[in-house]
Length: 295
Image (cartoon, rainbow, N blue to C red):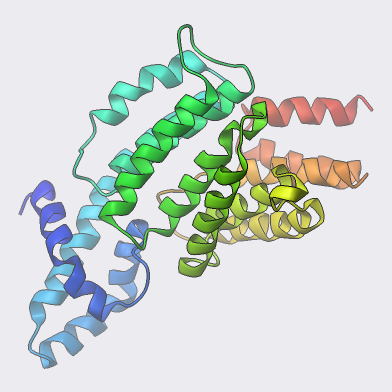
């Protein structure tokens, strides 16, 4: 079977697989699930007279694994352009991401992620010539996340990223109360599905950090949540590389900001040093480190 055929078979057979492997659909976990559960599943499903279920799981696992390297490369390119604040390069990536396998589970997720990064830069006034505003990029992001979630309603990473897209224009003051309410709903759903996922924890924490108190924000609560997110990213780093895998450096930068808000520049500097070890090109982290070291 070709990899595209395996993906199609995966999409068709996943409801049966989900009966055996309970829990939310996290595409990057499929291969890990097979490696830890597949052999046991083979025994159980054969006894139950349903070996096709295990075959579908194996096909899903290896199709997802084959896709991982391509999506990991796309994620790395998006992240590098975002870290270096190269809005032109992000715009140029649109055709590359859109031209990737449109039937892959992560296709709309990564299109949404690309527009999310553009929204964040636009909110800071960094855009390519003729590009849209933060709110326009955020709307494009949500459109693609809607599509990703229509294909997998238990996709925790999708709910979390859609919430982040709703909040992205906040940096330029464009966020509305309704957007904040909808973001909280998405975050709550993501936390129900994957309470230990570091990107879910990060976006939950960032919403508390960025939103004003009338919209549900709370910087004291954010500090606790950001520490949890940084710890979750550290735990994820010790595991098999995942897709999606972004967010560790961003979590450290937000934690450093909150620590500075709490008058703890020494701890903030230590956190930023870790962020810059993993992403030395991260312009926001470098500027914040310069602010701390200059006093």
